[in-house]
Amino acid sequence: MTLVDLHSHSTASDGDCDPAELVARAAVAGLSVLGLTDHDTLAGIPDAAQACESQGLRLVRGCEFSVSVWWGEMHLLGYFLPLGDRALDAFLFEQRQRREKRGATIVHRLNAHGVQIGLDDVMRQANGAAVGRPHVARALVAAGTVPDVQTAFDRYIGGGCPAFVAKDLPAVSEVTSLVAQVGGLTSAAHLGRRASRAALGRLKDSGVDGVEVRHPSHDEDTTAKIERLATALGMLMTGGSDWHGDHGGPYRALGDVTIPADWLERLDDVANIRARERKG
Ligand code: AMP
Ligand code: ZN
Ligand code: FE
Ligand code: FE
Image 1: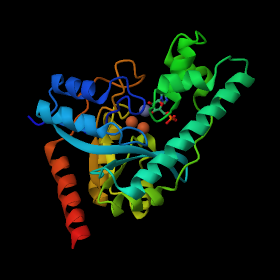
Image 2: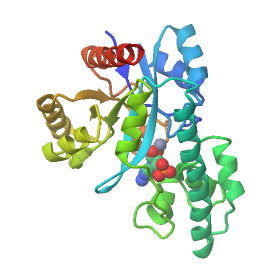
Image 3: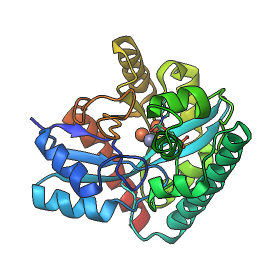
Image 4: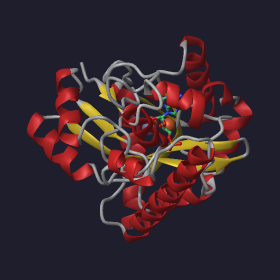
């Protein structure tokens, strides 16, 4: 059995395990292919690649971008991304800087709501990683403001809450062209109920190559529906556990959500064609 999980996070963004530990856990879970898809960074890839090599796993180099679409924020998974590409690295660097600025704004809002917390508390939790709300949540837990991460999201930083701050996002087409230009592929992440035929068609027109069919937030009906739509529209299919750690909120265990090997073969085929086109 080839077990493939194409969606996971490490300490390079908001996951609990460093890349080597993540790979070790993936091996224990019986995975043979792991996609590392940290938010707005490829910083975990080199360590993950080394660990995969020594554990006999295949690593798919990925990244989870946050992009703007007609309803607001959408997550876009990028795969087969090169390391050391100047345009891609510069783009990701800017997104991380925006994340840091947003972190400061969130802290200001929290302070205005009487929550005593500093940006340094958040940065300590991030420890050099791409800053995200989970780091704010962990800082709030460490400060004793809330009992757990989930409560931090529910009371303060989740959508509609007093300290929620939207990201300043790039357009989806900006990211799909950048990724295509460097020879990668994109897949619209965890669309859930947003996944209609019209929505997927529109995303495809924006250059999105595939769609995340299997995800812990997708129930059986949603999964079946997205698979049907992807097939009808000729889009690639991806999926994975979106594992952030054992305390990662609504997520299941690493390796609990896997995709068939032939979905990965199709991804490989398209990526190979794209790589050849770039050379020729
Ligand atoms: P950000 O990119 O900074 O907006 O943070 C989004 C990340 O926060 C997601 O990728 C999840 O890891 C986490 N997250 C989002 N909503 C929740 C929630 N309700 N409870 C726990 N974690 C969440
Ligand atoms: Zn996350
Ligand atoms: Fe996401
Ligand atoms: Fe994710």
